[in-house]
Length: 411
Image 1 (spheres, rainbow, N blue to C red):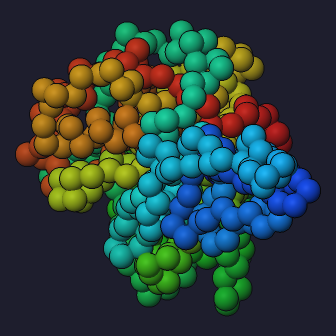
Image 2 (cartoon, helix red, strand yellow):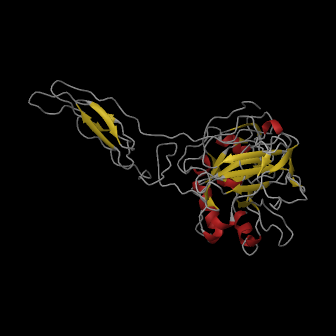
Image 3 (cartoon, helix red, strand yellow):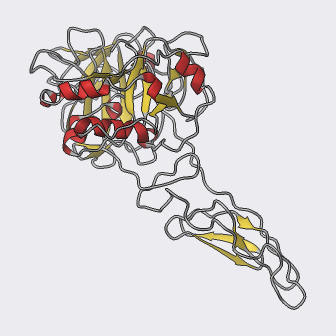
């Protein structure tokens, strides 16, 4: 993974789409009511009509209410007073605890990944969004034409030090570590302050000096530390770019803090450890979820050489060129539903299944179609097969989806 000068920055929320509520008419002597096409109900949601007024009770979403017919001679209900087709729950919209509404009006049970007992962002965070039903981006074909679609995907992770490879990005978690001073050298104005209690500067992060550093011989040297205090719903993620420890603390080009119980974004224009300004840890292919839990429930981070100097939320930063045909940071793609996964098994199938449901998100400048995972010695017996299978996917097997407008705000 390579990061160009200019760096990286953070996230935005997907739109929640619901069925619309229509007007309810009334006639002399009574009013009819009906549920219109497309409406769906979450648990407890009901539509009732009283005297021509639609009222939604409970946490459910109301479907479109049909126009009420006037009471005709003899007391019959006029046209429009009958229950309309579509009042039942739409396909994929069955209510479930923690269901995350997706753009387009579908909703379902959300599964949220966890590390060290910490939930990785709320269920409705963009990282956890099911994008399998989203419409294509209006510039999907333009972006893909500039992304070397014939290139095979590359699994950019493996062991940390067992074979001396340092492939991927390591992370660690824990709590109770002392807050140590961090000397921010390059982007202090785009780094999250955490003032030192005893004087020592504006940046004191509780990252242990023993925290692993991404390949110390390379330039990026990411450091990811998850403070599990506040588990399960309010943990804090600390990430450094170009991190290096000393006897008393850390030196880094940038420091970013992500409160995992919140969907709040970093300011537009701010970088992070990634050129997109995104957190890194939520987008890694992690060993525990892939091998042990056998389910990845979030978008996966990937890189491209040529990117547009613009971003789509949840990204907040870019480091590309002013070329609107290039993919912007934060662009979300999914593995096409037509891609045949029937011949794949094990970890490879887990990864491909996630790419169809949660997709991949452009997070940094680097080699084309490099998919990033956790650096972990436990990967060693699995990586040959994973690497072989991942390379059977090409860029042309993906399609870009619409998750929001392109922005250049504060760049």
